[in-house]
Amino acid sequence: MSSTDSKPDPFGGRSAYRVMALGSAWLVGMRWCVRGMGLLSTLVLARLLAPEAFGIVAVAMVLAGLVEALAETGQRLALLRLPDPGRAEYDTAWTLGILVGLVVGGVLFALSWPAAAFVGDPRVVPVIQVLALKPVIAGLENIGTVDFQRRFEFGRDFRFGVATKLASVFVGVGAAVVFRSHWALVAGILAATLSRTVWSFILSDYRPRLSLAAWRALTAFSLWTLGTQLARFAAEKTDRAVAGAGGGTPGLGLYSVASEIAAAFLVEIVMPVARALMPVYARLQHDRAELAAKYRTVLAALGHLCLSIAVGLALVADHAVPVLLGDGWSGAAPLLAWLALASGMQLLAGSVTTVLNAVGQARRAAVLAWAQLLALVPALLAGFHWGGIEGMAAARAGVAVLFVPMGLWGVRRCLGLGFPTLLGSLARPLLASAAMTAMLVGLDPAASLAHPLPGLAAEVCLGAMTYAAAALLAWLLSGRPEGPESLVLGLLARRVRRVAVPSA
Image (tube, rainbow, N blue to C red; front, side):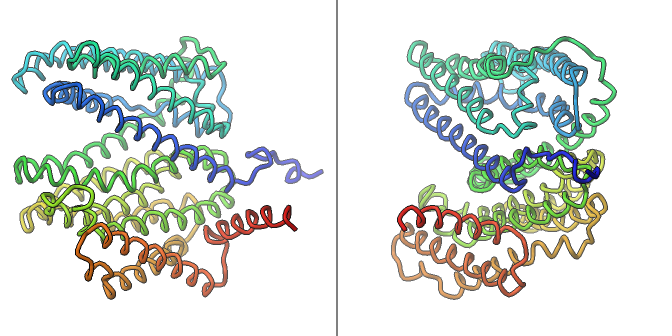
């Protein structure tokens, strides 16, 4: 038997596409379950606690989010991309996580007094000091849970995430009933972190030990990952800082809410998919031809996903805003249109980062992230100068569109694919988006309807049907190439046969 014949199957006899699809489904489901429970608990807590309580904890969580983002060193990503990590690598990653947690906790504790002085509320001090326990507890989480992704056990990952959120909901609501103060929110946050750490040792048999034996192998990758995280964090917060400074509280409120709606329809779907793809890409990193073939299909699928949602949301923004937020938020409609496009393009460009990290090119991913930040800041300032909040949102969308081809240019050599080939993977999603735009702009199905809700429903249905029909037609005219269309049609055909055969 040749060496080629004896080559091990990295997916245990399963199709790589099946692993990607199942992983994405599990993780999207987990994300929406967690979001749903979070929304439900927020609605309950809002009836039990005063708005002031949420404000006190919000100040602490903004500071905690900033410090934790600076401490994101990517040990788990490093383990995912290593072909065969052993105890030395796992134990080193766990030990580094503990050290980072202790440092972050200490920094948060020290910043509690300056933060309270900045907001003028001394009650923030003990809240931040107690929440400083959060990164310390999180640092103890069993590193063995990374195997849920390495082994494609996404069902266990789902249970892990949902169980963590359930602890937060029950403890937070229970504490609110008893104490009726902001400490109920703090209790819920710490309960979620403690529950995650406890469940990590219940669901994983691995028992880590303190060690720094493999620190060189992990930190070389992790430092570049940290650079990417810093650039992304700055990019996410810069536009809101400009909106707040230039547009005041009303402008920041409109911009923030529009951004949250765009994120809810895009980030909560695409980001879990990216998390499911990372271990698959890592398994294929030494077979660049196979990795390139899979990435082309994934890129086309993400193109359909991002463009259909982003362009569709931009087209229906005028009716979506009054339905979702009420008539008083009409100023958010143009912002939602631009920010939906920005989110879709940014997530599409982000697919490059997942591949680069999987093949050990974290440095290149960090360079792209910082280049985007350096282009974004002057664009936001110029957009605000010329067009206010809406001009800034348009500038963000323009930079995001620009970095889709730039990202593909950066990944072409790693995959051994030509730049036109990569761009061609987005041709069918672009054509389908253009057809949907022409249909909705030309017919304007909501024009004759008095209420925005039926108008929104008509636009969504017509847009979805137009996009699907145009995408299918483009696929047929291009010769039925292998891609997301063929995979979806094949899956539907198998489902139909399974239903039809028993009844035959």
